[in-house]
Length: 606
Ligand code: ACM
Ligand code: ZN
Image (cartoon, rainbow, N blue to C red; front, side):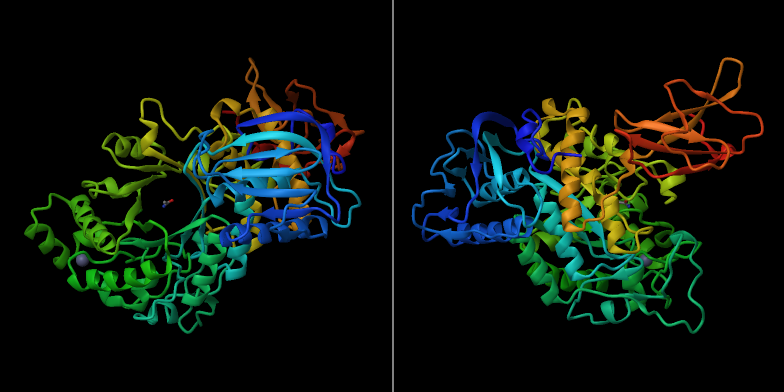
């Protein structure tokens, strides 16, 4: 673990995530004292707000807050806005100069001051009630690689409270994320109050309670009460938007249409093709059934216009996300109204029908002064003229969209789906896909031969089919979102996993202090079977980070550092062995979790 008391000892690897563009070490240290002040020039309310937030963040780290002052003080942390961008740090960049007398953060815009403060805070050992706080003198110049540094949270499959969402946003802001994509509607729940359509939350926000394997939930019983759910009132949303904006995070709301709309349809059945009354989807076997809005029903566009009016009035950001993913077009094929519309507009197939739908929604959104984003399926049948594409089924959709001159956000499943398991499946046992932190760390958002100007950035997504409580949201997010923050902020030439690992571990101390439930999967052993030249099975262990010792047993003995130690050679399976148990140690102490697995369940090495 990172030395808590004296980060000065680790000169070449400051405990900073994401890594800054340029760090120069200077001699000496800055010591905080009761006389240290946060110094701002008078009259700038936004900078004062940042300074006060900083003082609060400092207090939660060290137990002591600093006063904000507009007078020049002897020993101060100065927050200064530049008049001119003479070192090209842009709207989010900053310089941070720590000398024995003063700390100065300069930026062109308030956002840069906020990010400079987040960097400064990472130098401070996260221990309350400590005596002297002493930090190293350095000179930092820093600015982001990408404009869009996002995380998405699905609050539909399971509901997370306003306070949990704020906590999530607060954590994001410490790692310089600037977009929170709020997946507010889906088959299992509509989570936003819409005053004109109260049934959306009276009916659409509630389903039968279930826990476990989402896609195998038993369907609602005939008289079962839909007691699980919740939604955000418009006042809640205003509060969260303000909270995010104070941390320089823009919220992109997603209203997922025309598919993933079972909750809406349960509330207003006339919006679907068959008009049948259904229930909000609870994740049961067989899927959600009719969950797609009818394109041939003109009233649906009116309704969407009204809903989007309320959405737009609450979210000040530039973008509205309209989903557009995984539309089951069979419902349209079997619908007279949809087929008539298709004929009337000479649409070739249901892809073109979807394109017609999205283009109309784009017009609605643009009439309200906003821009449309959708998942990459919105390209099927022809992309709406000004749409921005979020590429999730790999990067091909994004590449195609960028080549056609559209803006793109890259969020491919194989690097960005943070709902996937992040460690040895026999330990995680979560099911679904698999994505390790060091794979996230290898993500390159700009594909070769694409003009980088079209790639706004990238985003990690937390879908919550298998995430039923907020502690697990944190577990799935961190530390992989640390890896992603570096991908999205730091220069790609600086990326180095071995250098990143201790900086990532330094954040674990902060997580501990903030009671953030980060995953420790990077310490677990990973197991697979390989075949030797004679076709015999042999066991191979790997670890995601270097320098771990792996101990194992075949005889139901809890392994410790006196057990058999794995060398780099594959292990022959002893006759009669049915299970292997293994654990990792570092520097003589256990760090990973116990792995127990039946030999026949070990996966074959790829
Ligand atoms: C998605 O994962 N359906 C965007
Ligand atoms: Zn229809």
